[in-house]
Image: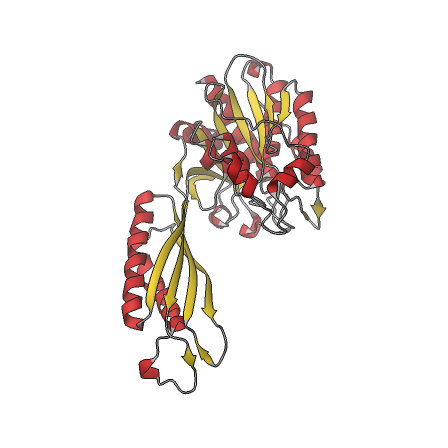
Amino acid sequence: MPRINAERLLFALRRFAKFGAYKTGVHRPTYSREDMESRHWLMIQYEALGLDASIDGVGNVFGLPSGPKPSLLIGSHAESQNHAGWLDGALGVIYGLEVARAFADAPDCAGLPIAPVAWADEESHFISLLGSRSYVGDIDEGEIDRARNVYHGQPLRDALNAAGLAGIPRRQAEPERHVGYLEAHIEQGDSLEATGKRIGIVTSIVGIWQYRIVFEGTQNHAGTTRMAIRKDAGVAAAMLAMAIAERFPQVAEERSVWTTGRIALEPGAPSIIPGRAEMLFQFRDADIRVLERMDVALRELVEQTSSKSGCAASIERTATGQPWVMDSAFQSALENAAERHAPGLHVRMPSGASHDAQLIARKLRSAMLFVPSIGGISHHWTENTPDEDIVLGCQVLADAAESILRSA
Ligand SMILES: [Zn+2]
């Protein structure tokens, strides 16, 4: 049975957080000097375990066992959001390393190959989920040619070049080489903490659908235009937002979420009736049928709002991420391991955030484990998880990895 070394795990996590240390968190944007240093550090750790360590053309780092037996990939993403937390991504990456170390230490785990991995740019500095999308063949060279850093505009090609990755092939998924993929991550919400649970077993990762809705009214003088003849695009957008707030609870499920992230009025001056309103709207759910229901409801509401307000409306769906169901046998392995180490303190739950596992699941059986986030805080340097939960999560992951590999 693999026994993880708590001290070694916490030490490695804290060491990893020194790459781009910022306040109590990290600032480690994809392909920055700190990010590349952290990836090279990982390769050294993988090599020390006798693994074949490599970095591919988008910065994904692999530690591949040499034998013919299919291995279990374990990891997450190595970079961080700007000025963000020390555990988002790093936790899963260092768990992969510690599980590989624990298996190497356990004589009865000889012959059960663990392949730690660190994906690149899940955090969207250039392309959201770039590393895992590249691995599953969901990206072409043209998209890489066109991509730029979303914060400062640097072309992705230049960043890859500066990082020493230009010309290196992008590794493609080899389903025959791996039993599957496990990813651990901080929850980034407060569900676990609020319910006193210590382990979340992810059932599915939500799909995210996004929309741009535009109302075209009539721009006119705010003092001389009678109320009765106005076509105020700003009022239309506000009416729609309110109509959604009333209607969506009837079509959504308990864990569905929806957000109006932006309403922009034009021209946006106090004495001018807005002639145009653009609204960015998003909803998430783990069930495609619920997503489709919300889509139908949204389109109805847009139409109703248009006729009530007298403003022409258009709706464009700008993103349709599909929800992904996690492998049920892997979920059971995680649940059994959680029950052994934290009886009654685990729960199955969907993930409201995107993760690399939703891409890897297209090619390999995949599952995810969550540990609690203190106060539900993430994407901020105060992000944290109690040490004992960090240790527990890794032991549960190691146990699940063993049972998955033994039954493979
Ligand atoms: Zn993450």
